Every structure is written in structure tokens, then in C-alpha cells.
Length: 446
Image (cartoon, rainbow, N blue to C red; front, side):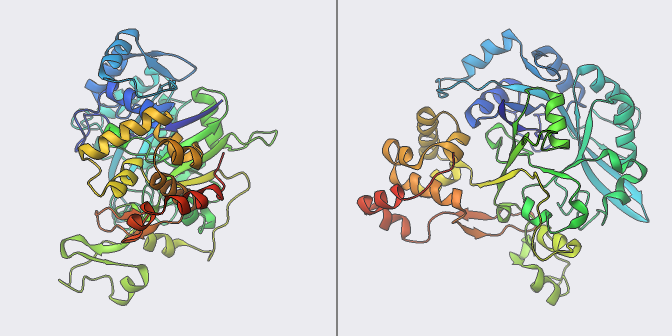
């Protein structure tokens, strides 16, 4: 079975998250986005964990579905049936831990994702973590716990579970982050390093950047939204072609191709990394952004105020890179770089992505084509032209081909990816016949 999974999200109990991040809303948005398997996030938080036990029941091995009562609540939440082809929504128990500790004479701040197949495993993990720190203070608890020791706790209490280092290049809280990370995975996880088989690239990097580093060849690269509100689900995700259960998904991440050579981990849905808020170096307070070469020329100091700038993901990748061009291991998943549909519609309409105009157009688009990912990945360009608009057809076609305009993010400021150059949208809108001819001659992915 082919299915899409977003395995790293947060509930309403995490800091700086939407109060709408409850189970019924997450399930509703999973259908709208086109996600089949959704991480629960935050299973370490006592209140969220209790809600998960009350609202979810076992489905396929290691996966959970909504109980009937919640299904009724979910139906009422969906004010209009905007999904033409129902998405089977399943949940997998996940949590993110913020480990803050000293190693090698330096304070380390590393985020790791835990995935487990059942409530009993999660309860055992929670019991140990609660004896170390306050897991009720935040859905993503901050613990004075070495990443290596966190992995050991998981292995001992949830042997079928696994740990994935989160957004591994983010400057402040990650495995390789410029502010508090390591240069080698082995320096972080020590004698248990062989239990790590996958890494989460994060919004500000993509597989192409990571494959500049030969020491990462042995690891599968996954992508997730790390969303703090349901509408941001699936801005990054993973595509599988395997049995629909936790254990098959784990095996596909560990070994993207099976013993017969069939691709089980098919691809990752990616942000264009420049849109991530830590792609380039810079100092947000002064509005200063620069590439790695410029950063070195100015010795990492803001030319406006003289303070240290935040060294971003691209600089850190280049610091550890030992290749000039990326090398993808055999069987690596495909990469689909996309712009979220509300951002495309926002650019076309010339208003904000959260405006009423864009919301209405978004609903209309989902009603017509089934889900956001179906629009962005699979709907024929001709259908978008015929049944929606020539501009959306042209925009999606350009996104699929990587023909976009990129403005890099830096120091916590999101970048911007656009499809049309100034004045181009208005010109194309008045040339429907020419645009139709261009669209007809383009090939769309299956």
C-alpha cells in the first residue's frame, strides 16, 4: 500500500502551539492535507497521553484510529465534506524530547523524536522520564538527560520503538546545530550509535544538502512537518509503499528497499530549504542576512551592530561537507520539493495566506481535487487548467520542476519561495491561449 506519513508534530500542550491542535482537528486536517499516518506528538505529557488513550484505539499493528465517539465529533468539525476521496487516518505514538546537558566541556541542546508501537511502551518510557524531570511542564519536555541515555531508556522500555534525531541542522537545538551540536553522530550517541538508522533533515535542509557528507551515507533521511498548528501539517512528509503498519514503516525507514529490491520508502515531501528560517546566516534584529562566504569574510559578526550572527544550516552543512556534489546511496527515496498550497494561492490572489480570499479558494481547490498533496503532486496540469485556473496550473507545474524564485530565511525568519516574478502573473493572466499551449506541452509526474 502507498501511504503518506507525517511523524513529527505537536499537540496543544507544547509551547507556542495552536489551541486547535487537538485530536479531532488533527484528524480533520490530515484528511485535507492527504496524510494517512500522523504522529500524535507529545505522548510524554500526562494530559495529552490521557486524551490519546481516551480517543484512540488499536488498528493495524502499531497504529491507532479514532474511536467511534471521536469520529462523530470529527464529522461535526468538518462543516463541509471537502474531501472527495476519504483518507484513512491512522496515528502512531510519538514524542519529542529536548535534552540539555553537558558533554565534552560544552552545553549540548539536542532534540530527538521517539516512536513507539503501543501505550504500554509509552507508559514505561514516561515513568522513567518523569523520575528525571518535569514532563508535565511542556509537551516537548526539557530534560537534563544525555541523548545517549535517552536512547538507552527507549531501548530498555520500548524495544520495538526507535529514536530519530530531530531537525539535525537547526542552530539551537539539534544533533549538528552550530550553537550546541556535535560534529559526528558518534560523539552524541556513543556506544549506542548503531541503533540510529535515520535522521530528520528539518525545514532548512534537504537531502541534496545532506548527501554532501559521506558520514551520513549510512542513514536514511526523513522529513516531517514539526507543525505547531493543524493547518501546517504535511509541509514535509514521507511516502511509503509497504504494508500499512508500524513495523513495516520502521523497516522501510531502516531499509528503503526490501530484499527483493522493491522500493518501500518511496520519497520525501520537502520544503524548498531556503524557505526554512535558519537556511542562511544572519542577525534578524538588524535585518542582516548573508551566505556562508560572506559570513566568513565578516568573521561571523553583524556589520550593523557588531554582535555575533546566527550561523545557519547551509554554513554548518558546508563546514562538515567532504563532497562538492551530492552522492545519493542506492535506493534513496525520491525528493519532492513543494510550496504549500495556501502560499501558492496567496501569491496568485495577491493577499495573505491566512486571508478569507485564500481560505475560500483553498476549500474550493480541495473540494475539486481531494487533498492538498493530490493537487501539488498528482493532479494533471491540464486538469488544474480546465477545472480551476490557468495560473494555478502554471504555478504548480513550475513548483514540480523547481522553477521558483528563492529568498532565503535566516536567524528565525522564514524565507520566501515564489513562482512568479514581478509583473509576470498579470502578463500570463492575459495570455490564456498561449499559456494553454505551454501547459499542453509539459509533462506532469504520475
